[in-house]
Length: 420
Ligand SMILES: Nc1nc2c(c(=O)[nH]1)N[C@H]1C(S)=C(S)[C@@H](COP(=O)(O)O)O[C@H]1N2
Ligand SMILES: [Mo]
Image (cartoon, rainbow, N blue to C red):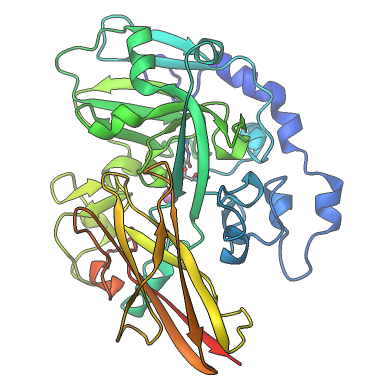
């Protein structure tokens, strides 16, 4: 599938383009260094332009989570506070990826090939000339909420709370329109579409982050090759200049720095498709199923978001005065059915009240909910649960869905507040 490549995951021509802008992206501004926090690394010295309050999960790779105190301030998440998940260090010739600025790239090729009659290349310029559409959608890491599985047994990996989450506007060309335009003539044997990005492992034989989608997957009808995030060219760190966006699908399915689409008989053998980012078909318990046990038969890729809701206010660290209070937050799902109810409990789940739900225009966006109520002085355990039109809801005990990699947490959110 990657015959024309030297095993480097990137063509010579494309590498030269990237190397040409390397200096710019690699440079960390002196201001960022001078404000480096005493307690730890300043997130902006890892990825230029990010907010200093981001929670660092992996400094080398530039993996960071958004504190909910920041996330709740905006309906559309600004790039400076958007969580970041990279699998390869954005350094060396990938240093250009370490910034919230858009990459200064004019020439960018996406090879479309594999089992096709006419392999083709589509350029960034071609894409810019095509009709653009917008998709407001949640971006969420499949590992979001992983830390909460520790109540049963800790799942290794970044201990994300709820901030591996964003609500953003993408703009670009529908995938279907791109495939029609290139007219590569896929063979009848092609069952899967595989997407690859320009980033790669620094290890000589390191696995590449490649993702596959079944060609009959209806989610592909809504997919776009995005060129813009929140109205601006996509920041390098978020996958510019071109990113595959599949609204409603977990983060890993949304390939950044897209430079290859390939028609295949099978899904990619890359461990990022065949071992990681998979959801078990039947529940498993700690000790009985390990990371190594995943195979194509017992699991599926982490495709669509499970329905979820999160409390944005009050948070445990907020000061809450006794009396009238507004409990609020967001809820979202895979966009396949509207969310029909959000209920809030002020007593740890004994009794529930309907929150007011305000559905966003886009089915893939998060939806705000709120409940105006009263809280007397003392400790209160707030909980929230969302349900959609298909009857899908959230488990009261999220650890029931424990899995070795701690993916797809959607347990009922619980916040304990002290009211004075
Ligand atoms: N090319 C490429 N695409 C990628 C990744 C990556 O490392 N390389 N990480 C994936 C994962 S696991 C997530 S959660 C999202 C994170 O997107 P963001 O960094 O823009 O928030 O990108 C996905 N797409
Ligand atoms: Mo992720």
